[in-house]
Image (cartoon, rainbow, N blue to C red; front, side, top):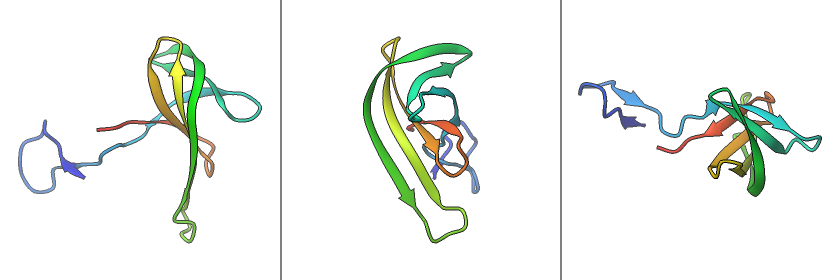
Length: 96
């Protein structure tokens, strides 16, 4: 957690870092992303640059299981997206 630079100072003025944002994703039969929707615009995935998986806190009732992809979009942007393997929801991982 880090202090929100836009907020007035004082105790309790913290915001989480790297909060994921819900994202609408089209995936193929293998659950790999083929398109994302940003601001209502469909952008095709040109290339899957990298993939990885995170399984954490498996001993807790709400464990973490995510499949991540770094994707190159048709407009040249790269995004890190993931599918939550517990809920099935997609999100964009943001940084900063």
